[in-house]
Length: 482
Image 1 (cartoon, rainbow, N blue to C red):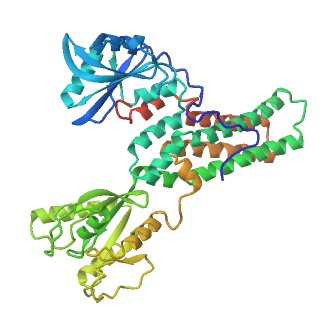
Image 2: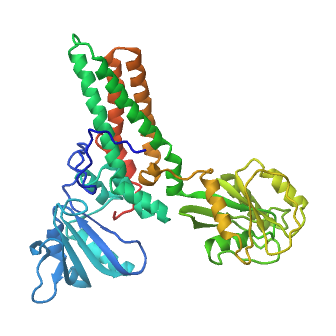
């Protein structure tokens, strides 16, 4: 259930919050530049320039082609121009140059983007020309940091940019898109506005103690705090879901040799990633790949079959398998249903008994000879050879990951991260203390202290009371050029 108090109004534009930002000094006087596309060879690469000298720098290195060509500083906003980049008197590349004038840009500064050929050398030379013309090389996340400092995004939206880029499934992408669009920001701002209004009543009473706080006013403040507390608790319940969508979940494929572990990996990935052979012990090392299982990024770890090692290489592979199992969030325990239960099966069954696992009975296309011990653990029958049972396997795995529940609506819109969770825990604690004091009739000064702590923490979430150290920590995780 979304928090939507009656007195709160949504933002007019979800892409432009108009958020008040902390005073962190004059950090955007210079002009920055960076390669905004991934490293390596490609058809195109983009060099981004942002800052007060962006157009002047472009004038120094860009030579327009054709009779109608013009210098970037003379070009209308949001226009594209064909020409060449020159460095030290030599032509570097033919390019398309985009001119975008403030404030209708990503950073709300003048922005120039140069699209050149995507070879590593030519891209580096174009960037070098930009830097020699007066720009400074951007730090990781500095473009998005400027978007935040200039009020285009609040802090939760800025964090969503990194999530949007790193998303590995459509479900994770949808959650990041909703947060980038302001879904979480609006609710946090609404809650903070409501708490600020309640705090104003409390502080007015502190300033004029001769007037008792009316019963209906006290009850209204309590109701407002209770509503906010309920929403904070609902949002906190989405923390695990948000972590799964962002980081994925690690699933180790375990079992004795030659039961089909590598075949299962290949089936879930939809490609021949691991070597498959009827000879036991083919897998000598762990193999990791990420599969999209019903919108969840699942890091699959194919392990070497656990048995008595025949040589040092196999011994190292088995050691790594044990390590992979230790760090896995859950296990896919593969058994061969076409063969009788073995001592090796029993050993692994007992060894993994206390682990969160899905029992996968492979070779369902062959007659069954396996008698499985009694267990309440989820199981599924599958044939890695024919693909029979694959969708049932995905459903069982999805159900195990979500512990039998589906993500809430709030998770799909908010997808809070670890930082959000830590701050919201402080908000909850402050609201609980404030409510306890109000109900007990304690001095309003105590109530006000806790309410201020809650509003300050919410301000930290969206960036209104963020410190420079916090911003350094958040944006240092971004890639250069974003």
